[in-house]
Length: 353
Image (cartoon, rainbow, N blue to C red):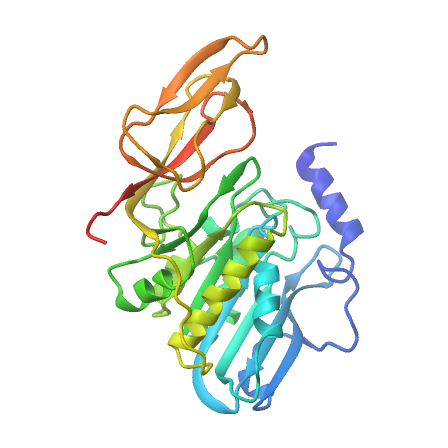
């Protein structure tokens, strides 16, 4: 059975009611988000319908809404647009658990599991092999991924005033805790710099592995086009909970809420991150077993050894060297690499910051 068809078969078996299993009858299923349906001083849980599966049953994503007793901005927290990006789920859960509703203002909207198909299937991409975060704005009458993205674009993004979009590295890679933000925008720059992160990458929403201008864009780029100040945060590694990343992520969310005056707490002082003006991946040009002798967050210089490629007998096929001075944002963690495999994600430091 082909891999694509096998995934569809598993999907039908595993998710007959929703992609997170049997729906809890105590949690209402909604088709649209009505922030006014949550009373002042309350936190409520919902299942938000996105679309239908192949059995004609709803595909649902978890939705948490906290509404303060006084008016204020609407901050959105989204996690796992890719199905293997789990640290953000725990960060969102922690953000709501720690809210003091007696002093909370504004509205916090959390979606701890945006890709309802891929999360329970332990996969990154949508089950048609599309990357949802390369498909915005989506299409109302498009293919499956396009329609899924279209629903996110119509049902979720317009409800938000600010957004933090939470990601991790992909399979076979590891990431530092770093932020993607348009640093030319005052609000987004502020959100980025208070995240307790290692690195901030000045980026308007173009994926690091594809600098081409395309008709589609990331969710962050789409949100910004809608006038929603948005940052994307990469919290470490895929398919795991990392305690340090989660704690630091919770600090970053608290700091944004403090800055927006949604909570009375002062902004927590954090170490100054390295700010990069651009970044790109360095690739190997032949296959083999790759060793990457540099660490996340390490400053590297032009000509420094960043990769050693060996054949199955342990003989060195080729050494790879850093093309210019920079900092290691992410790197390959899977030794087995074919031609075109990634070595490091190299950030070029902006000395003006």
